[in-house]
Image (cartoon, rainbow, N blue to C red; front, side):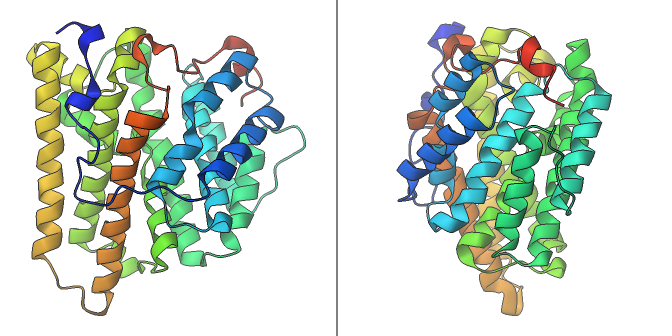
Length: 334
């Protein structure tokens, strides 16, 4: 298989998962909101980057993943979608010290500090979404959202950095550990609790079965992302944090065989998730909380798959739809 012949839909077609495929009815207004933020607030981006972020239609990812949110609830989720995607994209060439500063500063703002007038939209929108979430979500949920944000940068973006600098992939075993964090999905998983209105208490979050299900949810979304983003990453030629590429490196596989193996790993994790949920029903009064958490997370998995296939130009062949980091914008990023 030649890279230009690769089609992610051959592996993960529409409606692949056993959950509903829905869209938030506020999608049109969500798009207008996001375009306004890009134009008026994300001033450190170049004009080309702004155009490409608009064409990515990231608001549609929010709408497909969390179709039951009210408009007031979806605003901070949509705001975070843009903030975290831009952050991850644009710090590609930042130093470890710059990434650490961004992690610490954003976390401090989420915990109550105010951004300075000189700080850009990555920080100012953190303050806005913090206040928007606090208006309708309890403190226990907010603390978990903040913790998940912190650890995905600390153990995802920061731990992958040395491998990217060296252009050397980790082993498959280590990659699977790091990918759970650098796919950045943990904070997004909390949004399903907004939809259900059922907040998982700490002792349920810490239950080993729930912890394993969360790991599997994140891994499924990571493998899904690796399958769909591969055309963009093949164009770059230096991307190493993709399951297909790691499998090629580890086992000297062809693109076709590595893609098939990536799908097998994805399906294995999906089967384990469904089997765990079916078998273990010992959460007592919190069984409905766990059931709803998995249900809304599943809708998110189905929804982001739909986003990749139908809504975005982000992962086009040749990388032509991606907002590659620019030296001019990096100077004002941190």
